[in-house]
Image 1 (cartoon, rainbow, N blue to C red):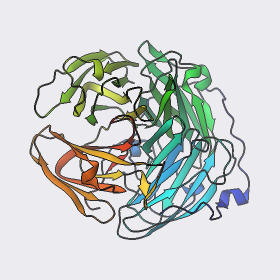
Image 2 (image 1 turned 30 degrees about the vertical axis):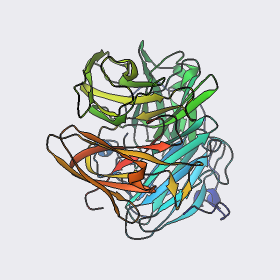
Image 3 (image 1 turned 180 degrees about the vertical axis):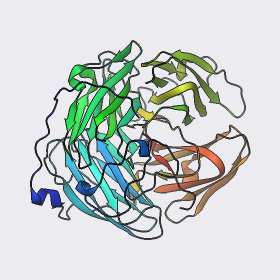
Image 4 (image 1 turned 90 degrees about the horizontal axis):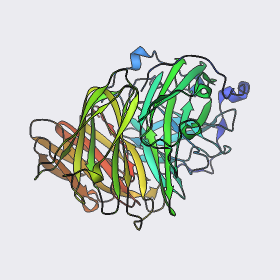
Length: 491
């Protein structure tokens, strides 16, 4: 179902009691920390307004667990969301109706607007968070009366569209990998403070030439409920494969990045979620380099030591040479898979990334110039393998987030050393759509005909696997990816 945009949103309790003070845009305070997020953390499982949510202790939220991504609270940040046709996809994995609300504020507003929510059992709700707000970037806090709810976000413009998972936590540190500031490309960071305490944030960047710490991006002050966006290219110029570090001197925030690409009348965009810490293992379940297109991986090393990194491509019927590289401290490296000798063209394969120290990895996909729009997209890898996954499709009750949006394929990779039995179900009615076995390090791609245009999917395996779902419209596999979230075993 779709939230009726004609229903009257109400101003929050905070708004009725008094307007919040304007947000200082760039006060400068010295200091830099280390950071990074992936769908983690646990916040209160009670219904409440954003102003009532306490900021969790940073140490308590540092652990990444695959069971924490389905909670009763979620936070979404969208650069230019009010201008980009933002839509949030709310999936209820429980057998009970979930009542709640979403409080959204834009960078051009001083108080949030609250919309009531009612998500049917095993149902999907499309929410338009920018309704009633001015233009600008968005920060949204979702709260529900119970758990079992997953929230993803989508943005669209004439350049293209993209989806990413929303976070279940606030954190003092976030890291990103991917996006560029070369000609025709832009990159922007959005910060949202949904807590009751002021946050002071530093931004720093890793590039192939080394680290950059722009002075104007140190000591950014976010009042409670504030959201701001900062263009990376203002101070990081002509850099391909950028790593971004968000570090809070005090308080906690939620962060995302928006990357755009445009050349010769063709374009695309990528909405990137962050990670609270680097990892020594990353996976990209389905990768297909197309004729005339491009496929590249950005490895960002936010740590103080050089790391050795291996990218291994997996094919069921062939041996593919691995790629080995060293990434210096506080820098990035780019591996162009579409130009790597021995890596296939036109055939899907999985890519696993291992390193001697924590890194962050992202992927950029470009389609041939004559392909359907959008022809470019960017996505973060996953550092988690789980026996259960929820895939949030780009539709709700048959209504797409953008015209014609649907899941085009779903891929599953067995990351373990034993045979895995896998079942794919429609998330709403639990109907089995496919069942199969996967050998160690094997991957399978299910086409649209097997998925029957479901709005969400649940993947269950006998041991940990990774999952990626590609969406249409898009010029090539991987240009638009729908979010997949690890599920608790009991859901």
